[in-house]
Image 1 (cartoon, one colour):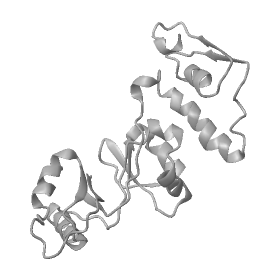
Image 2 (cartoon, rainbow, N blue to C red; image 1 turned 120 degrees about the vertical axis):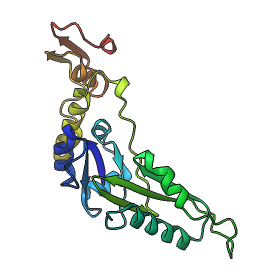
Image 3 (cartoon, rainbow, N blue to C red; image 1 turned 60 degrees about the vertical axis):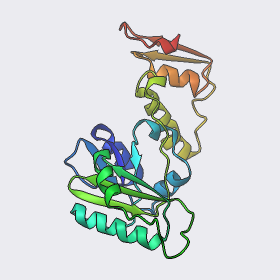
Length: 217
């Protein structure tokens, strides 16, 4: 289950061949089959441009359930079956985490020595359904670096290179050019990407607007 904001759901759906899990919340949740090539690639490496649009990844191992009681019962049964007192539980949204942790089993006096492992467990409540990923491998989503690039256009240019050109074996098509002229550049996302990622020797950013990012200096 992937989480993104509504404005980016179409782009994310196209990249992963995903289907919307729900259409009601401000954050969009998309279901992606684990056997798709894009998801398998995500499990090993997060494409650069996804850092700006992908918020969370919830590996789902059980069909969704509709009530807190059902979700907590599934979680309890699984944790008891794991025979361990050590586990990492992530709940989204966070205001539900205390409720789940209060109901989690306390294995202070097990009948045998618990296995000293730290399994990852996920519970995501999205639009009336509880999605559970129990003993699921965590997929790390890099920080979107909102304050380290001038604008979201920076990620769009990286998406052109990494999603389209790389697939055709042409990821170097726009790299190491002598000059790039960015007309209507404000606040400077494309210009910054040309200079920083595409190693353009000289970038000319032109715009009458006064809100050009200081990062372009």
